[in-house]
Amino acid sequence: MPVSIKSEREIELMRKAGEILAKTHEELGKIIRPGISTYEIDRIGEEIIRSYDCIPSFLNYNGYPTSICVSVNEEVVHGIPSKKRILKEGDIVSLDAGVIYKGYHSDAARTHAVGEISEEATKLIEVTKQAFYEGIKYAKEGHHLHEISAAIGNYAESFGYGVVRDLVGHGIGKKLHEEPQIPNFAQKRRGLKLQAGMTLAIEPMINIGTYEVYWLDDDWTVVTEDDSLSAHYENTVLITKGEPEILSLSPSVK
Ligand code: MF3
Ligand code: CO
Image (cartoon, helix red, strand yellow):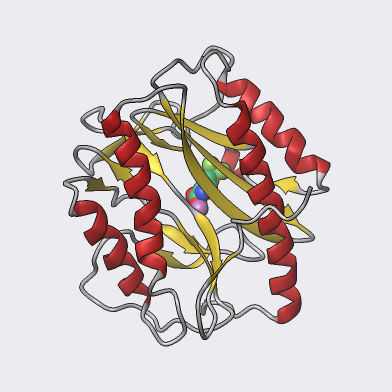
């Protein structure tokens, strides 16, 4: 399957999906505090998404049981919300969410501090976000996909961090996961040539320690091998002839 090029109409729907997702993340950011359960975060997230007539895309995706992936501290991604998991001061928590608006997907993730966190945790969150911005410097027509990968990985590795290799970003549109796969570290080949109208979910997952991860027995939760902290930052991005448009960033919806 070739990488799809979206029409103006499709881009308009993906913009709307992205705005709603940005708003969802903005609202979820406000409820993060010591004492809240990861279950409550999921409940509120799903309510927000449905209030905009969107469908939470992760719910039942390959059997994933909830709408928001909530991953705490050494959990990298795909943590499953639970009433028993209560956030505490000093934790970091990654929220990953996806919405479908009129058949089109948007996917984005943010890592938040729970109350006061350590300097090293703060730096990890900032570097992970900046790694995304380093990557999208190359997210333009005429550049090659793996220029994005290398920029993300080299930036994060310059801080001594481990860049997760077992999970990647992806194309997005009518489906949550479309071609191409987008690794977050340098590749031997330059990858495909980017074209205006491609829509990509770019998502660095960065660990303070080793890049190695493993899966918990729930078959979803991905955890760092050395139990070091991990952060995640993701947006759905539209490739254009000029600067990329970050579709899941600005919550223009009220
Ligand atoms: N953002 C995640 C990804 O791109 C989506 C989680 S998949 C789910 O893989 F199954 F957990 F929903
Ligand atoms: Co994704």
